[in-house]
Image 1: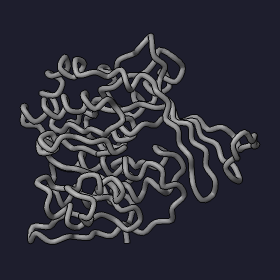
Image 2: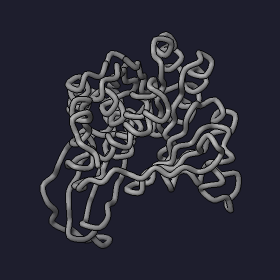
Image 3: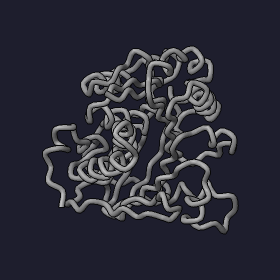
Image 4: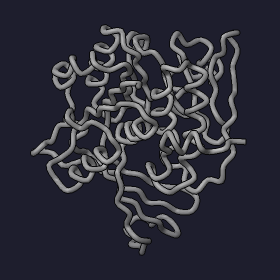
Length: 295
């Protein structure tokens, strides 16, 4: 069983739908308010755990109702929460999401995610040692990410980075990661200059890059040093929220079976994830993944 340590964010998602976005100073009536568990770290931890990995989450929540909700949801999904800090002086982070039928506006509030410091990672070095894979995103402070990557590298662990949202990391730190999992927007920040194409960035990278491409699938560099495009599996989508996080969690879960198998399983899991509403609503279990007949 793959042992994964996820170091990242935990958010409460507050979401509603409107016919259109309000103008400045305008009040509109929206649909029902939906409150759910989110944050890239949280989502990726749940995705990996549902697929059978032994997952531990390292992050921070506030001592509030949202924090309690986030912890209980992780426990329900068999994620170890012993390493999550409960902050008394900061609220749990929230994402305020307003959707129309075409687009969305998202505001992520400051909260306990920003209290995760390098000292917290240094104190958890033995925890890193006990895991096979270190999975990170970029919704926690930059210096904390750097410390985690450094420790993972020094201990010879697989370090997987989902560079979202885009925040600049030094080249020497990126070279200490094992895999980069950006989407088609985030990958451009990894280029050496503004004129580089996505294909050039993938081919010239010293670190293997797998670019997620929504319903188009993924791009990566093959063994023949050429771009490989694997198309997405065809499903009837209901909500694409969380598909990228599902891919990241599934990829780490199946890495022990080989790179190509990890890609295939991650594509299948992310396809299933969009068939239900919510970031975590459609994340499949291992049994659901194995039972589904993909065309």
